[in-house]
Image 1 (cartoon, rainbow, N blue to C red):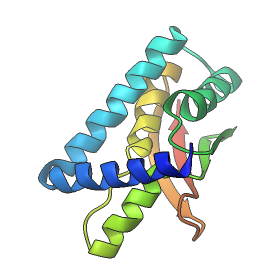
Image 2: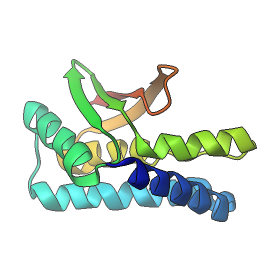
Image 3: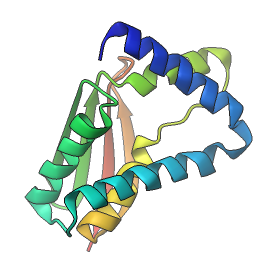
Image 4: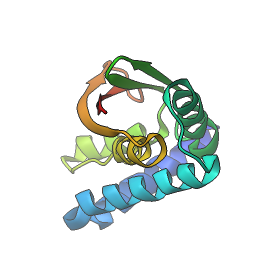
Length: 144
């Protein structure tokens, strides 16, 4: 994505979040659900383990294209999504500077995708920030 594109996403994300502040959690969940449904339709079947990991990583990076790089790792009962160059984060950073709430629809996208495409239950364990805007690691705990 070019700088111009990132600038647009940043401004658009900021405007959307500010316009739906009272319903932010509901909107975030709806976006995540919609994107997870797109992923489910794309793969068309239940995917397990390495197949899920590979396809979800491809969906995040090549279909949603919200970041420069997304890596999905699964170890035992954890699924980690490592994000670099996230375009949404730049809008969230502006919102933080203004003292406004932020929104990351990628977190619920992962939760809904794990459930709908892998058939497993998951819970958000943590989001680790590196200190660089646009980089994080989203960690889900997997059950079943």
